[in-house]
Length: 78
Image 1: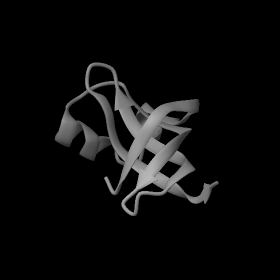
Image 2: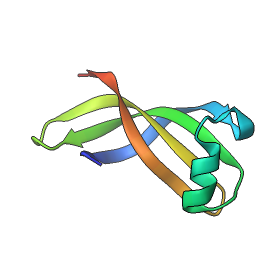
Image 3: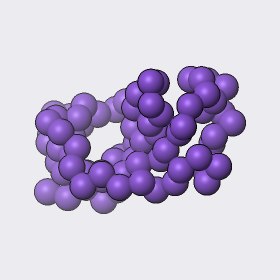
């Protein structure tokens, strides 16, 4: 990750679940089988340059496996 999540993630919503996830075969091969979900939410993030912004984050999550592959979706909100 090119950023650090500062604090907690809020307003979490599902984007896709199970077979609706395009990367499902890759996720299952890389991390294991599980009930995968793609989620989005908002959090404060610290970028490489040290600045802190509010950003929309997307990630994958499965029960027993945890949260994987966080991505920032721009634009960042101040």
